[in-house]
Image 1 (cartoon, helix red, strand yellow):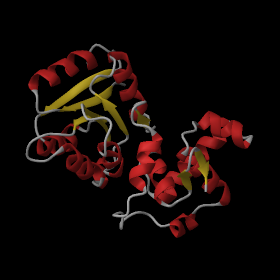
Image 2 (cartoon, one colour):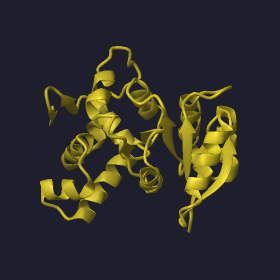
Image 3 (tube, helix red, strand yellow):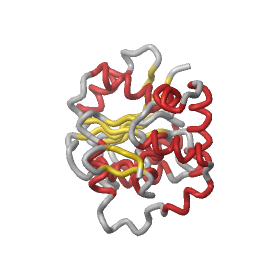
Length: 227
């Protein structure tokens, strides 16, 4: 079954290029194109896309606001958003994750990397480009104007093991690496990650990374470590 992709960019030429690339892969198909943020939200509902390739700067409704509308709509729980932008090293990384995006890539990414990214995000995994470093995310999470950020006590719904798993997800470990670190089977590690997402209402691993930092479970002080 093909992964259904929605293209959201205000430039027709850019969308055309992405369409050719996406449809060159046998397991991917383009189900719609949006030139504004409003169109992106509407088409996400009507096409039931699996992944939305979302530009940040668009008319009527920017990509971040459109992403938030999509990710906050319970009827679109299965839709993942992959942000594509020319503005990679700045606050957009953090804002995109806070808006509910599952991944973030610069438009200069190699074609094979973009196709792989769509597949990763469609599986519900987090994806950040190398330039979108975890240190950058941590810097913005440490800013004072985060009154809506999760509080440490909200992690009380987790077991000790789940808190440990959340911390390891926060420092970027894969399920296989978590399994090795905790001496578990990969399937057991995956189960713990899935339960943690369910208890915290996280859509995917990207949201777990944000929660791990916003609650102070993970911090960056010269290196990544659990607090």
